[in-house]
Length: 215
Image 1 (tube, helix red, strand yellow):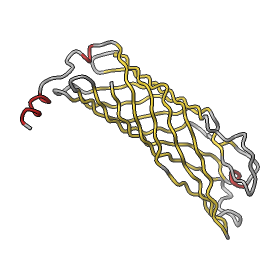
Image 2: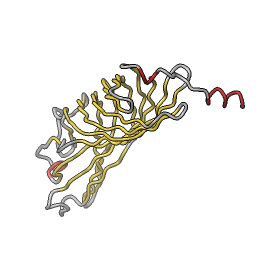
Image 3: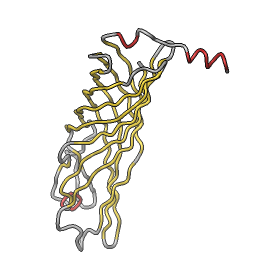
Image 4: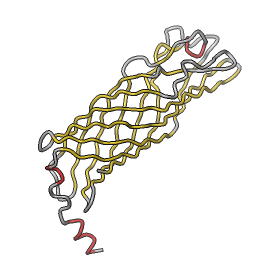
């Protein structure tokens, strides 16, 4: 145990942060959410309530990191493939209906990373920037009806990300756990003529994402 502590106390990868460019990969878990804005005529005699049920998801992607200063990095997270599910639960006067909204995103994020001073083999950092997402599982062209409810999110969306994490320097690699919030700009809902979207003014998909970066 003492030998292990001494090994950790010794500086690892001392020249790592002087490199102009480096690469890595990320593994992520997420919780998909949706921010709903309802129309003024909701609730009604027809539809009483709409709620969101969240599910865990997973993601995998690539990291390209550019050093632009002692404490600043420019980071491209692309491509990142994320699988997300959020269900909408509709409460009617005499029944309840649950509609799956599943997504398979291919994301590209351009982020600015601000790092604290390194303390032996650890740094703290904050990160934020913009995100472009394409949903390969979008259901905008799927057949729908009263007995076949479908709520679709448009394939292409943009948004912002912000979070924080820790850089841990090991002998051969850097390991970084990170917690991040991802929000979508504007209304991402595809409107049709059925009751499942008629009472909703807008849908803004959201993610809370926990990632493990290896660089």
